[in-house]
Image (tube, rainbow, N blue to C red):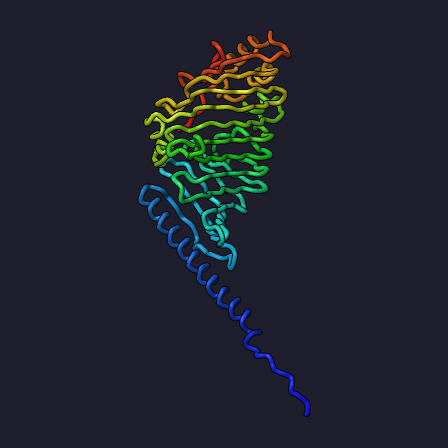
Length: 346
């Protein structure tokens, strides 16, 4: 009599598929909950901004990306702050990993349009326009804006934009660290501009002698908690009134063949919103940049003052020279020579 072969229960084979099915169902529930929360909070934030005087319009929002991404698309977005500054885009897309919903990246795949209050609109194109925000639960999230090979075109009757293109523009902010602890009222900021080309006849083209401008500057923002409220005066107005300032300013500039290492212990803004303080430079071949500035056709440049400053620095020849740029009375001064209006924060 032949012994029968024992039969293995098939329930054991089904167990892994049941487990995978349960995990998939749980993950799908998490994805739908996360995307619903995202849409709800986005709508609530838009309503809060509208009550604060913002103008925000957009087509219906859609959410996709299952199972591993939360991707929120906002077509025909037009966002305008009470200050008059704003941004518009055919589409804004925000995306986060469902594993890490504390880190979002926003991109403008079809470019965008910047509105500069009284200066008009500028179309911005490029190979990549993105903004990221992380550590959302912290007092100061980490922020990063990046433009890869951007182009800038003034629209309608807008004032010309200082540059027409660049290889890369980057801006980052994060909490300042003291003895390894994140500050509750100071931010570190980094600005990087790589190979920017100035508009024809503008000050950047003049200073670079039709070359390229690069800048790498970092600083600490004091009284950072006052950077809020995009009212008609702009976000820097309340910050300035509260004693806000830039400290530990350090950087390097390259304009054509001219280079400079810059530093300042403190820079602030006056009641007119223009920068105040002094900036020390150790410059190589500064005359080339200053002389080029003097030939600029921009009405903002004091060509006579720039010519005088170029003549005053000519004696340095090819040797590095120490200079001090002063921002006062709404102007930018090199010694006794007024070069141009001081940069304006608001």
